[in-house]
Image (cartoon, rainbow, N blue to C red):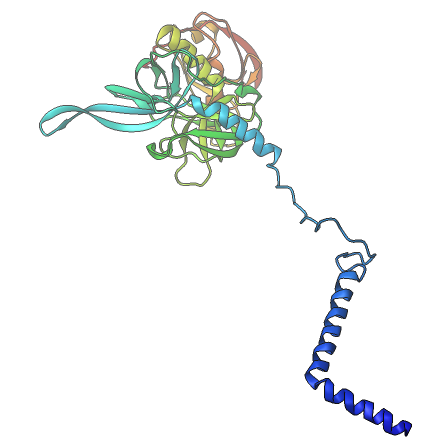
Length: 377
């Protein structure tokens, strides 16, 4: 048998017994099997490092820590949390009429601060001036009728009392240690309905000379750029130690960021007198004064000029004369009248007050024993 013919015959036999589609299926299965083996057995397919190590689980996404509040913010949050429960709203009511009936009508809404657990509250005198009834609303929305313990028009301060115990209160600081630039918080009820609002600012200046509209005396005030609006009157100005260092009283409406607060050292003296006496006991020196700069017309002239000495009064008895210029009370320098009235508020009738004066260009010390001033004069 011919070998070539035999091989050709075998070939032809195979083609007759295996159709073309079978060959295609066999080839496709081979390619698929190779691809699967390569995918599952190839080292490093799930290893980002390419070192052929298979991780036990996919790497977790990196978690970034949340930013923490600044330490100054945390200090403010803490102070607000402690002080705000002692900030109250004060609503004043005056007699009015409604449909022919006599009723009490709300005349204003402002702020105050509880300064003792037994219900003493400090606020501005102009807040309660002429009120027939006063309601105090605490931070937990309880309302109490308040009694006026005493009021002082000259410093624009009033002391109220509600019949309640174990109240939250704020400690009183020392405004004599205050420095310009310190961070302060003004707390109160601006516009009468934005209850328990706090604003942040700094002490812009100290010992600003301010005369309340109802007072013939000028006293020094703290200037701040913390937001003070109508309704904030009587609310506390607080330092970052949580102490009240002033009572917010006014703002200059023609300018931005100029608020004024009564220094807490003045408040403490007035509140103490009002609590004990129902009035402020002021020393009477018996002089009429004005700023030396107002007398001479030169803004650089410092001191308080005596324009008149009351005949037979304490000043006359001590030898003071018209034309003398007061430059110090005790060890406290006096540059203008508000500082003089501040200094005198540290004394009581009958105390010895040492005044340093300039007379005809020479410095002299005089000791005055004051009488008692009529608060309404």
